[in-house]
Length: 152
Image (cartoon, rainbow, N blue to C red; front, side, top):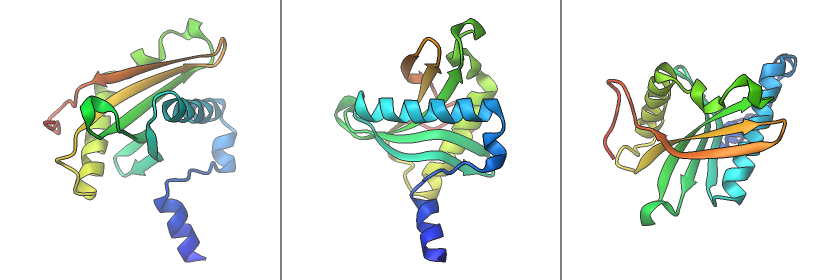
């Protein structure tokens, strides 16, 4: 039993508890993340490595591998922003300076823990609007920021 649980955790399969299913924002975000993962895999050819990567610093929505980036494999940290309607503004605008710094720290911790500090990496943003349905992908949406930035 513990072996299957460990395998489930390592494979990055994300199951949603009944607690998170109760909040509309959580369900909207989960739908957007699934749509973004499908879009990146099917339309862009990315390999999704992890969904909902969490540690003590926070969460990265998607971690993917872009095999076509400038002729070499690049690890892509993806922030997904989902809105139910475009009148709420642009989802990508919600990735402010503080969010960028948190994502930079999370990504650096991920790379350090797997001894991948020398690997090329970048940050993408995917905005999903549910009604009317649209997905926009921003490649290299922002640079690593804060005192934890890295060089590629």
